[in-house]
Length: 122
Image 1 (cartoon, rainbow, N blue to C red):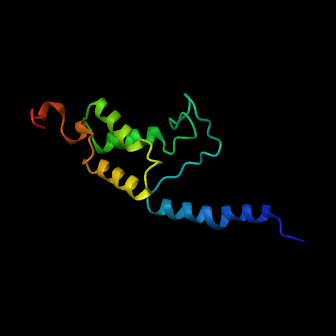
Image 2 (tube, rainbow, N blue to C red):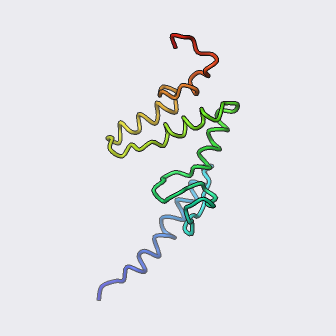
Image 3 (spheres, one colour):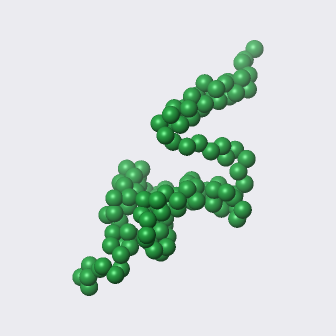
């Protein structure tokens, strides 16, 4: 008789997932169990649907921590630039674009130079 998949699936949690999570936490990464998450306006992660592959509240907090003092419009531009749909792009091109955005090479103008410091040519 064939082995049941129930035992195999149940053991993946203890054999693969829990050790991987422990390693990530050892390396300084956080872990949140979102198994019972319900997207919507009252969601504590800020996700409006499961189609959002990122946690909006955590992204915004990280942007504010890395760029204190910027205007809210700059944070909105940065979030839009980082989270825009890249599913039609080749993975390498999509990764390069995100890297360029993080390094300030993307046209997120307020993150590169605040409007008050721009010259007419720049």
